[in-house]
Image (cartoon, rainbow, N blue to C red; front, side, top):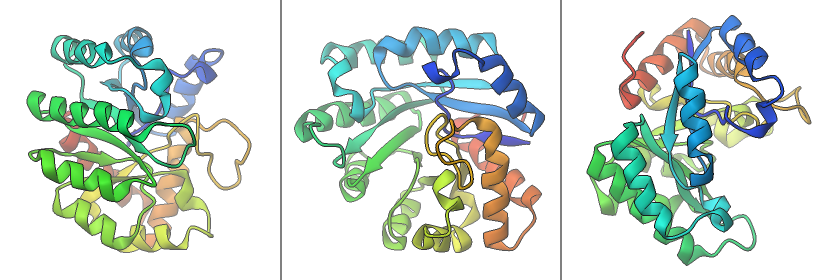
Length: 255
């Protein structure tokens, strides 16, 4: 049994065949998915989806890449949603200094408040950190008493070690399947297994061999197999360990 720790299964890309994609995921052993929000205007759809299907768990947050959809009042709304709905995490939130036109200071306002909300509600955070990993790590340390995952980790071994010291996990998905990702593959090959989570980031980040095709949670089995090969263990070992990590972080139980 596998858990996709980061899937945007509520995305419009799945509207036409969501039931079939979910069936494919379950058929490959991907029985549970953490589904993080990106903006307040999608919270209702996400809630309805996760309420209708077993094994889908919502997280609510304001993603740094979608500043044009956020308003300052949405942070208060987010707090209300967290208090009322009791999601498994706060997120997806973070910083993105890669995409042009995203105001850094505005990103920080949303990000720092969401870290505070995670601490206040005792929830893990699902973090986006692109060209901003050192600042994100510093913010985690400054706020304190936080747990969570940096999804789609792409940093150095030194940056990974700083996150592990803070108790954070690394979310690893499609990029690790590319041979050119030598630094990432080296980290994954030897990292402490207790800090590893598997993810697809569906519908984004297609795996090697599936370029140009919509990604989906059923592909997680290929991520698992790739990591197992890198670590020279069987896939079941990786599946069991990462599922336990996900259950522990998001308090899912082992159902």
